Length: 460
Ligand code: PMP
Image (tube, rainbow, N blue to C red; front, side):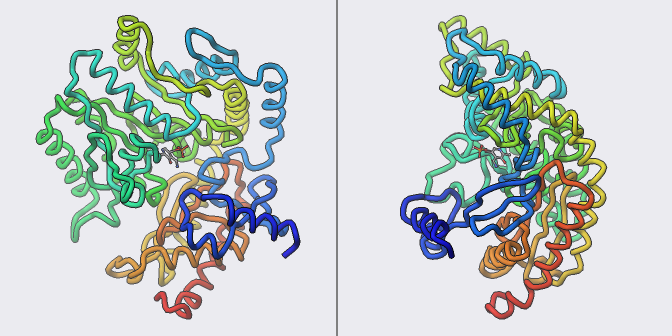
């Protein structure tokens, strides 16, 4: 290792506390330091090249070297590096981005509230929904419905909506009133002999039963990712979202689409809700809104959500919620330029055109002895590794084989995310057909080495 790599590794191990990391293991193994990016590729501090098969954290749609975004950020910093949006102040990029989002999001979503992260956006939604219920004289209507394996963030409220044990355990979450319903993943949670249609009916019956048990008057909102991503890439069963929407409408429950990953073309439609045929009252956007070149998220709301909130703010004098960086001019300027690039390059169309090749590539691994299910929609997918294909039995030590796959993947020049033993792919939106062939070739070589390697380590 050269001196730079050595000193970076030593400083990282001594001074950083990494998110979502086994901290003791990190002290021993050190970091993977990524130094530069080019298109769909990144390069580490030793110059090794990788295809970024997860687009960073499901987010760098424009790829890692889009100069237009750097130029816009630089120009905006020269012109006005910061201004806020409190107390009637505003700035041009945040106004134009709100207008653009109102134009391109489906249905009645007309207003944007900006935050810096998806977690803050979902916390904002919880507070907006509570504030609205209070404003409407319905202080009992506060509970949220979410799903197990959902990912909505890690702050106190958004982390409560998340349905993953690792984000709850030892953090004393959930800390807000939320019920987690069955994860709508047919392959894993469908019962023996149950058809997909019957599975959907069972989940919708569960939703109705929970509403009846809790009382519709106590439930404010249902939140869901159109396709559940960070929990393991699980597309919904047919008819699920239409049913959820119908039941929410019948019970006066707001429907929140968390489009932090599915938005901006990922599934081959502009937004994920359009892929699965439902119209939310509230939408969370982040990640590909700026291709993660700057931190930014947006809460989109419709007029019927807005009106009681606005009325109450007039009554009490102010809507008492907001962040220093809400509507940050550099982030929103980068967001605007990124959405212009998205439209010029037709990301949704690109995903729709490449979907069959990408999903077909993943499914070509379904015969591998360790692959239980190959799944996904649009340009997002996963391979779930199992100990026993026939029974779908997971490995005894969950995550060990997945971690080994990620290490071999790195060696083969492919970065994907091992979510336990689920290997997730979500490449930048600029991928081409040739890139997908290369991604699948590297994944194929990774899987070919995995069985032997896992045997040797006594993992299978
Ligand atoms: N919602 C969804 C659907 C997400 O995937 C994520 C992040 N992966 C979040 C919310 C939280 O976003 P952030 O990490 O920016 O707080």
